[in-house]
Length: 332
Ligand code: NAD
Ligand code: LMR
Image (cartoon, rainbow, N blue to C red):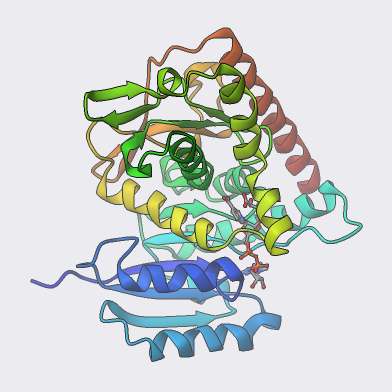
């Protein structure tokens, strides 16, 4: 029997990530090739015409799984009945703007969209925040949508996770699908800690630790980390635009694994509400290694953290604590 369509909201749908993301969802990349979808696309009035163009292209592409498109500039209409919400819309930093100015714009957007989701989304709606500052936008959304379970509100660090896999695969000349269990700890920013202490590579003679195969501590603690931390800036420099296809693809990976589960013995990185695991302050949205089963994520417990890693986990937690305080100061 055919499955019921799942309603997927994409905010900022007329933007560049939106333009890469919506055809992936309509093709089944996010929820499976047997899962019909109805897309809800939200943008702001100045982008209404472009948004309508995206809708026209979705119709023209004749995706068999796409059962409907709601394209609107009304947040209530966009949020009504959605099962999954991908929050890509936001206010970008413009020349001359201070960090606080960007934070203040985004905090008010996420505060009002939190209310629309809380009142109108389907029960148990899963939320992924992509727009920067992703962790703190997700935290604000959580604060202003108290009836959405905190386990349902996450932010995207899967792009950083995938970037780390890509760097290891290039360095070792191995298939990216044979590398697993890297970890992104903390903020989706340049303080994030890409950690390969527990990562492995599948070889003909079994799984081998990445650290053993790379055998170059200076590279692992130096260039590898900074390349992943600064990859977003490197893409902006090269494209004059921020990453879009990789962000869209990683957003699909995040939701797919969350809904359909992570493979046995594999974890992924997700920005989730901290419960104090690994002595990360509770009450932050922080990227942890997680496994997913039956639509629920669980933080991987008991990994050893050496002194070097401890410091890096703390630095990115401190940045998130500061961002949280800044966000709250914008609300008062
Ligand atoms: P973009 O500027 O091309 O698109 C953003 C869209 O959001 C625009 O169409 C804009 O009109 C819309 N928008 C603005 N305010 C809105 C609101 N209140 N409601 C609905 N829509 C609104 O930007 P992009 O390249 O698509 O990137 C989107 C966001 O994702 C940015 O914040 C970017 O920094 C972030 N990003 C995050 C990651 C990550 O890994 N977490 C990766 C790449 C980009
Ligand atoms: C990215 O990681 O590509 C985005 O968050 C863009 C940025 O500002 O780094």
